[in-house]
Structures are given as C-alpha cells and as structure tokens.
Image: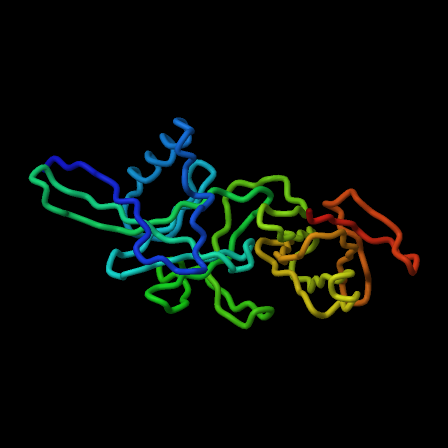
Amino acid sequence: MKRFLFLLCAILIPIPLCAAGSGALPDPNDTDERYIYNNTVLEIPGIGAPYETDNAVVFTAKADSRFIGIAFDFEGYRTIHSFRIRSTHDIDGKKTESLMFYILDRPKYIQSVSYRLIVDGLWTTDPLNPDTYYDENTGIQLSRFAFSSATPPETAVTKNDSVHFIYKGSSGQKIYLAGTFTNWDPWIYELQETAPGFYEINLPLPAGTYYYTYYLGMKAVTDRTNPKKAYTADGRVASVITVN
C-alpha cells in the first residue's frame, strides 16, 4: 500500500536542563541545511542501532515513552537534547509506524562520542547500541558511537567551553592528564582508549589559559597534536590551551 511520511517535530516534555537549541536542528533560514536535515529524517530506515550519515549520527528509539533525551560526553553531560517523533501513515491516513529520533552533527575533531539516554526521568544506556563500557572516571555505564571516517584528531576547545584532549600512541597504555587545572596531580583524569592507540577525554573548563601534559606512568609528555608549548614557572615544558 502506498505510504507517505510527515514529521512531528516537537519537544514532548520540557526539562529545565534541556537546551532550547541543538546542533542537530537546522537553521530555519538555511534552505540547504533544512533540506539535508529533512531528508535525513525521511531516510531513517527504522528503529535500530545508531548509524552515521552525511557527517551526522542518527539515534532512534521506540515511541513508547513520554520523553527521551540524550546527553553527550563532549558537553559534560550538562545538556539534555530531546528526541523527536517521526510517524508513518498509509494513504488512508492510518498510522503504520512511529519512532523517535535525534540527529547529532559530528563535532569537529571527535572520533567517537559517549552518551547516556534519559527515558521518562531515568538515566540509562542505549538498549539499541551494543557498544557500552564502564567509565571509571564517572563511575557510570555509558554507550559509545565510533565514527567510521577519520578526521585529523587534535586537542581543541569545543563550542561548549570544554576541552577535548587527545593522545595518540600505542594500544593498551594508561594515559593520564595533568595540568594547572589539577595542580599537576597526574592521577585525577585518565584518558579512555576509544580506538586502538587513540585516547581521549573531554573536560569542561572555565575561561582561561591552561598548561598541561600527559603522563605515561611517571613520564611526562607534551601533546603532539597541539603545537602551542611554553615553559611553566618551575621550568617544565608544557602544552598550552586557552578557553575564551
């Protein structure tokens, strides 16, 4: 039977932590961006594991909950983005399928994203994504999505005033991060190996200039992805990052 689609783009239940805007939403004044977004929504094949398309990730869920939100590591899990509804009707107007979805534009220089869902007020991992892991830094179970296409990775400040730290080396290492934001304590933050030899961590930091290094055991190494270096007050060479 012939079918057609229409979109119901609405936030189901407002939550104070929810951002009104999201990187997944198109600019209403940008015709090309609206076209890409709407076609991505129309082409969602159904409910399933998250997948990559057009430099974005599509997350889906069953439409049997009052509210589903998603929070990401690169935002420090501080912002909850609402899923939206896509409904399918047949030619007689009878609803044939409904699903909930969220589209994330790929953040710059990020090779993978860790995330949590909030379903009707309860935090949970993504039941449709088999890639989950226990994060020792936060003490919680997280879902993870790794991008299949690579971008030149480098430590950078994200648009949410966090710093996404990256280290590239051998697989199976313990990589720690220390700097002026930890009073040079090298045991507070451990980077996670998200791909063989690729380590990353996202830290929200207030505006300012920070000095930092990575630690492999007791050996301190500067960030090879960040060309900015300087001498600290005690004479060590450190990498430098500025959050505006």
